[in-house]
Length: 159
Image (cartoon, rainbow, N blue to C red; front, side, top):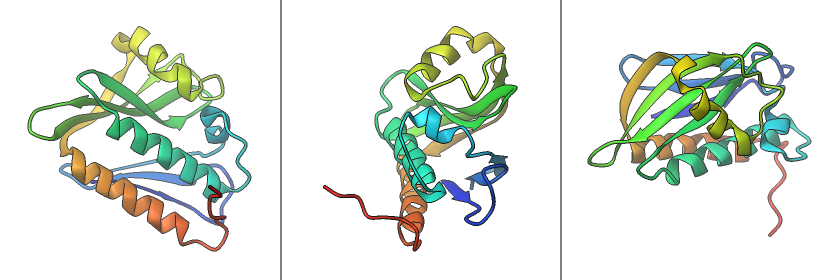
């Protein structure tokens, strides 16, 4: 299971947490500072930014086909860190967490990140990897989304 948590009252540095509940367990802390620009959306509150990020993350996992994709998480001034996910057999996905130097968080956007990572794949350093159930990953993301939607600062979407 993968969950995304965030510090509701802190600033936009070291305020978002990627938690992988598998063996070995894993916690990565990052900034939300560049997330609004990365998503290319005008989002006003941190809750809206994290919710927008979770929707991007969930869309990437649900849309995974036979190829691999990259889900950015740590958008730093010096590097970009995130998850490379690849479809495996029997409803499983291979998840690798790592980073790549030379690509900076303030330059990348959601539409360009996958191509940048693919072009520089040989420079991507994998720190951890897991074989996870796709449904468990989606369940963890859904849990994270529902937790944020219950917060008082989150405005309901207008349809």
